[in-house]
Amino acid sequence: MKKLFAGVAFLLIIVPYSLGAEFWGSKNSNKYHYPDCKWAQKIKPDNLVKFKSPEDAIKASYIPCKVCKPPMPSSK
Image 1 (tube, one colour):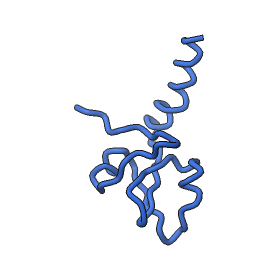
Image 2: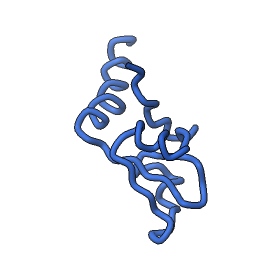
Image 3: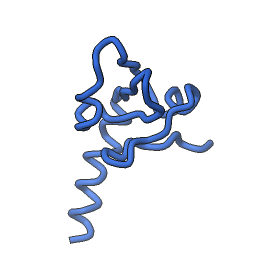
Image 4: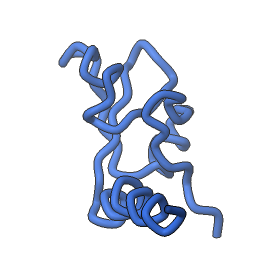
């Protein structure tokens, strides 16, 4: 069961990030989301801010959504 969970987590989190996933934020918030997050879907087009990476979002003073849990920037 642990292997299954690890495999699912890898597919849902690591693969989209490594394939150039996009992250969304709102001009009216300080959170960034996966585009399919229920909160990202509520962002009005005029307020939409797109990020290419978690690093870009953090540099713009955004924090990860606690609902969809996008990745934090990798520490190097």
